[in-house]
Amino acid sequence: MIGEGIHEEVLRALVEQHAVRDCMVAKIEGGPDWGLSIRLGGSGARWVPVRSRRERLRTWASLTAVGRFADNIGLKGFTVEL
Image (cartoon, rainbow, N blue to C red; front, side, top):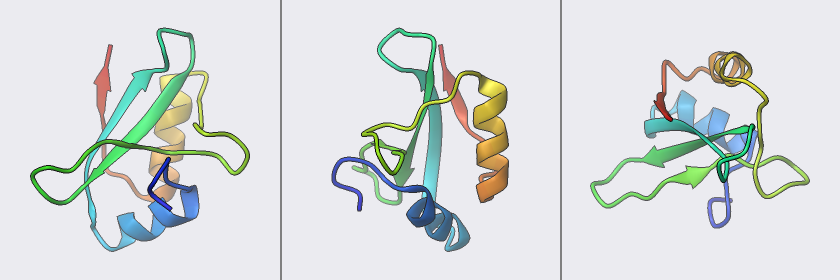
């Protein structure tokens, strides 16, 4: 579930339970694509990337696309790291 990344359906459940503490969007390895990571409760929590069904990381081509995804699953906002 959270070992290598978090799947969309698990993320949706965590958002509904208000368990997601922080969300961050950043470029993946300096490339053109964006990735979304979350941090759950607790002071020592680490960032966990959102993954797709087939790939280790889910990527988006634009911040607008990440925003639509976040809105669709109920996230209220995220930090962007440039």
